[in-house]
Image (tube, rainbow, N blue to C red; front, side):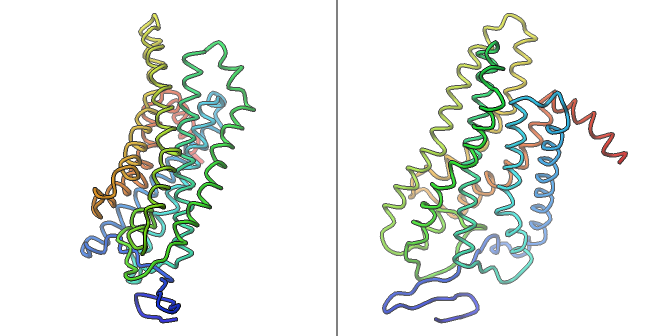
Length: 320
């Protein structure tokens, strides 16, 4: 076993296996480290506070105890978990010189990032199904979207990605890694990790595309299909007030779907030849940090029920 300031390796015969990685992150802009730390810290606080507020009001306000807000509460809990996989580590790395991450810690970070990312895709799909039933089958809505089904859907969303990504992460990190251990990214994501693997990664890349299609593309197509039906139903409503109300409950969800799935599909389904370090970092920054910051803002500002609940809750909270 050889140790150095930047690399720990284990040598087996003619093969050298990495034991840790260096997350380069934003080290290419040393003068902006403090500024970036401040920006990401503010974003992280906004995400935590915004989503915590949504979780609290969906629990305490009786008018928000509906399937739609049950899923929104789950989504907000998920967002806190999702950003907490990457942002605390990013903030720590911006404050220190040594940015090494052990092989196991890197695999763990990737696993949880993929699991929570997959869960987000599934919960957004469940939320679209809820809106589809509410608008296209309003008379059957209370019967179909009963509490039992909501709990089953939510549990399925949280659990489904766990076994898939255990095997997926194991396969990626069972690849031999040799040569440079510098990961030109701010967290352990699939494309930069595969760049460091030696040997043929074609099978793993096909698997990445397959999982991306199952976890990202199919839910996205189901959501689009739901919204085609939803919009066609809304346009048939006789009153302008009814159409406006129906659109207002769907528009915030549609904006979130477009932001999250758009950046995710571009990141994981574009050809390997079109990957560039700068673009990978930007897209990852967008879907892992920027989009979660906008989600509570979008749901609060574009949803009248949430705004009303906030107005009732905040004065009490401020007094306390």
